[in-house]
Length: 215
Image (cartoon, rainbow, N blue to C red; front, side, top):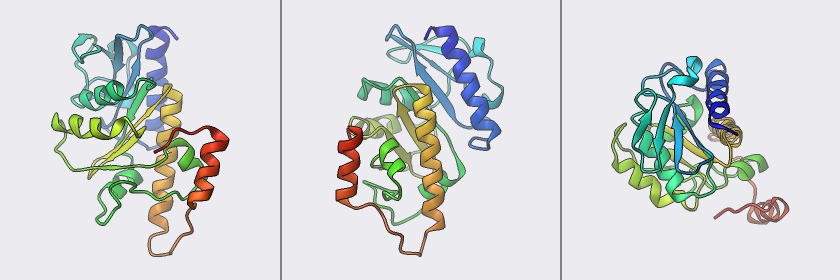
C-alpha cells in the first residue's frame, strides 16, 4: 500500500474508533510503517482520531526524527519501541479505551498476564498481556519499559493508562485492540464470579491450529 493510501487508512480507522467510543477527545494515537521500511506515519499531537486530515499526519524516520506533517504525538516513543523490537509490526494502536484502561488501574493483577485467557479469540489476537509499570504520560523511560517486553509480546497494557497493540497491518492492530477491549469488559463483568478460563491444553491446541507465536 502506498503512503497516500496508508494516510487515508489511518484516518478511516481513526474515525471508526472515535465514532464507536473507543477513544475520546484528543486521546490515543495510531502509526503505520511506510513500505520503504525506513519511515513511519503517526497521528499528530493533540489530534482527535475522529477528525484526522491525511495531509497533516506526521512522518518520522526510523530513529523517530520528525520529517514532515504536523508535530507527532508526544507518545511517539511507544510506537518506536514496538517497531524496533518487532520486525513484523506494520502498525501500532494506542488507546485509552474505557474497559482496558479500567483494568490497567486495578491492583493485584498478574503483571506477566494481566487479563486471563477467557476466550480463544483473545488468545489468538493478543496472547499474554503484560502490565507495564506506571510512568507519567510522555516519560521517555516508558519506551525502555516497553522494549523489555515487546520482543515477546505484540501488546502491552500501561498501568493507569491504556493498551499499546501492534499488528502486521493497521487492520490487524485495530482488530486486536478491539478484541482486547471486549475481553477487558468481560474480565470486569466476571469479577468475583470465579470464571472458567482456557487451560494450558486448550491454549496449546490454539497455538498449533493457528500457528501462533506466543510466549
